Amino acid sequence: MRFSSVIGQADVKHRLKAMVRDERLSHALLLLGREGSGGLPVAIAFAQYLCCDRVTGRNTTKIQAAPASLFGEPEAPAEAEKTVSLPDDSCGTCPSCVKAAGLMHPDIHFTFPTISRKPGSPSLSNDFAAEWREFIKLHPYGNDFDWLQSIGAENKQGNITAAECNEIVRVLNLKSFEQGYKIHILWMPEYLGTEGNKLLKLIEEPPPNTLFLLVAQDDARILATILSRTQLIRIPPLVTEDLAAALTERTGVTDQQAMATAVLAEGNYREALSILQHNEEDWQSMTRDWFNAILKGGPVAQVKWVEEIAKHGREKQKQFLLYVNHLLAQSIRLRSLGDRAPVMQESERDFAGRLNKMATLAQQQAMVDELDSAAYQVERNANGKILFLALSIRFWHIIRDNSLILVE
Ligand SMILES: [Zn+2]
Image (cartoon, rainbow, N blue to C red; front, side):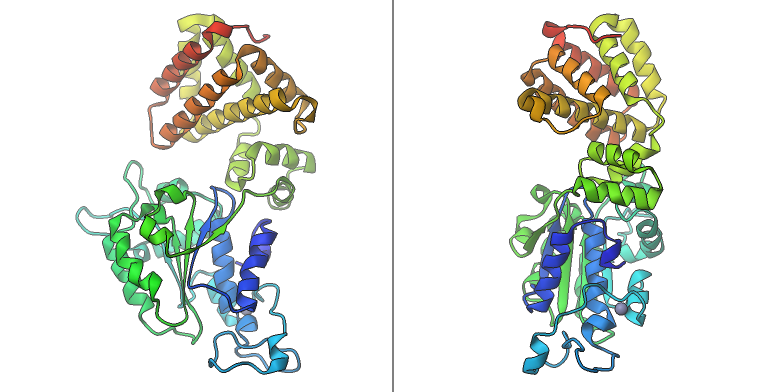
């Protein structure tokens, strides 16, 4: 993957390339960004960049402004070469790039959460190499849930095993195949338990020319011992314009649709794709039906509504929860910013206004918390009927004192 295939993130790309150019690249970086912001694509593109023959200066005839070799002998480069700028992107065509693009480069290794295929036999990432290549090809912005489902985890917990940690140590202590960097991309260090401490020495005193790229979403769930030994690079949520442009280019939706979706997805490309998938659905009418059932329909209407939503798949249930969450966030913005609130579609603005009449700020915040927790449970296979019924009851408790009814 080239940097040009990574959506947006111009500042991050620039920062990484500057580290290489200025020879300030630390040997363990933690790329930290929320789901859908592109931490993994950035890491993969960076690894390819570091291995690209055009960047390393290998196999290229050094006519005039050839870049200084990054990984050659440690002698100081000639004065003239020091100022030569490195290419802006990997070339995409040299043998290294071709191997890297196929996730088959012998010096780019991957670790990710896996499941045990046979009870009692600890799994290694390499056992899933074919599935991993396929996953990255199809869903480079997918999350750990998508990945684990794609390898048939169902209700099994993903894990990065102690055996995998031993394997990382073994592989990185081997000589590199192509005389350049050995790069290890460790996706979701959140899945490392205390076995992750096996990696500390490696992270602290790595063999020469070793680069660790950890790609994480939630630093609160990473071993403190690992966090403290890595240099943090934050991957911000995608800028709405970048996200919209990527949607238009990659999915063929109209500019207007792309923009509306990008606003809703709040910087998360994965989210944007799922919203488009469910584009035909009328989220607003579903939300209106729900609040009406909660506030004035009573238990019978609530059960009927819950049965409807329970018919949908888990992914759609989660989308719905995120949508309601988004609407509440919009109403909170509208409440606090008034006319200065971000641009919203007319129908959304109207709905957000109604939510403000229905509930106070504190009540809205309580609902947002409930929705977050429900989305988390849906991802973990909670029963839809039980979950939505419980959620409806909690919402009723939260808002019953302000039960102004939403318009039909
Ligand atoms: Zn190349």
